[in-house]
Structure formats: structure tokens, C-alpha cells
Length: 71
Image (cartoon, rainbow, N blue to C red; front, side):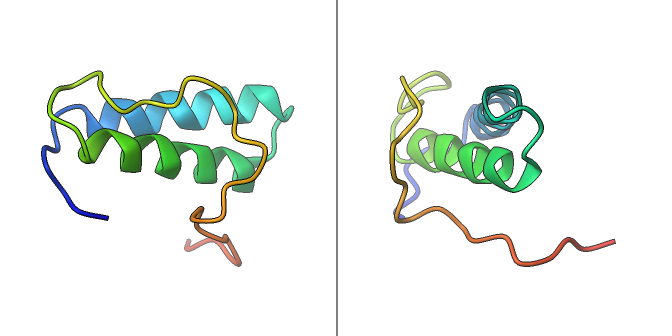
């Protein structure tokens, strides 16, 4: 995705991850996908709190598929 401004990307990832983790009752792969999707939306807009997800997507075709975890 095109990067416009990285301000708030870490916060966007963190909130997306925690929301996905709680929403799915501890599905880490889904939580990582939501964190990435939230941060991805944020870096495409100017500002720290813009572009964040407002609801859980039914399908996220651009989400990263987690196949294994790095130790």
C-alpha cells in the first residue's frame, strides 16, 4: 500500500491486535491480521488517528496469512 504518514502506525497495530484478540477469544493469527489491517489503513492517511478500522471486517482479502511464528 502507498505510505503517506507513519504517525500512529504502532498504536493502530496495537489496538487492532488487542481488539482482534478479544473479539475472537484468543485467536492470535486473526489478531495479527487485524493489527496489520488497522495499521495499513492508518499509514495511508495523514494523522495519528485516521484510517483506523471502525468495525471488524467480514472478509479481509488483503490480510496477511500467518503460516508460522518466528521464535
